[in-house]
Image (cartoon, rainbow, N blue to C red; front, top):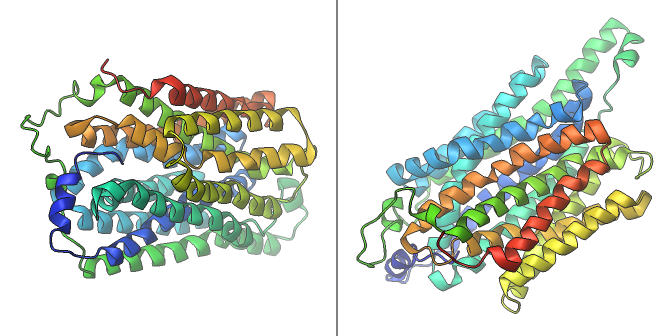
Length: 435
């Protein structure tokens, strides 16, 4: 985070020689948890698609409900954190996410897709608040020059969560084969009742467990002592003498920020679109013909690639210019998706999974390039970029529409267009300029 805003705090925070390793270790659990929960959607999609017999456009409302929370809740979360401080923001975020997980219980019990969507929105609202509070907090805890490496490290644990979640979900949620309406007709009424209960509990048990974990972490955060850094201090302009101008003419006036926000929008949209379709894609006879529970386990390779790429990227971005590294990764990602669209079998399957490796560094790299040179407007810019995560709500629905109309394999042209734009941003769009 090449932000000038946290630097004044870091000097103050480090003045007493305090070690922040404990605080950072505790914060890392948050990054792991929200990665885990977000990625569980990739397993929920094929399960609910079968349970409610939905088409691709309808089932992508799962991602729409989840990622719309970023557009709705990001800016209010920023105000809440400013008012109550980082620690309280984190506790409220964890409790909100826990309530969202609890709401899965009645949703599964009543077999209501609408209730699932509401639960997902509440859950994602809590995670949005966590992101708004925890990302800058990690950047501030320690020396400003190592802020970027701290964020890369915590992001890698976020990727660990996304890698484990599909395995966990495949075993607990997808292991129950969902029966068709025709199969249900041949069953005895007592068997249908028992089956419906099993179908509901396949979702209920994992999310009740997640709720318990989130509430436990919230209780831990409520009682532990964390370095007290108020959000209002972070916004201080670092003694540049200028008045804090937070009108929309400020951050919006930087062309590379606006283009970067579009970059975040298409990056999240592209990455989520691919992850959302993998289980159903690998179920296609011409691709791999896998059962859902088996296909779900392969999703771990997609997100695991992102984790490996982040560890590699933390090192390689010190050797290669970040914008060139971004451009190269985007070109390779686009090529891999095209290969998957034009081939079948193992080649189509592994080329789409390999995209995860090249996705890895895109978010932190676009983020840091977009806020470069924004000075006192960095806080506002960060809010704009977090709101752009709503790409994960809109683009999967669009890809769902094309999957229904031109087929699941050809619908992957959506992520290809996303990566072409990101390559342009790494080539030219990132250059700091006023509009």
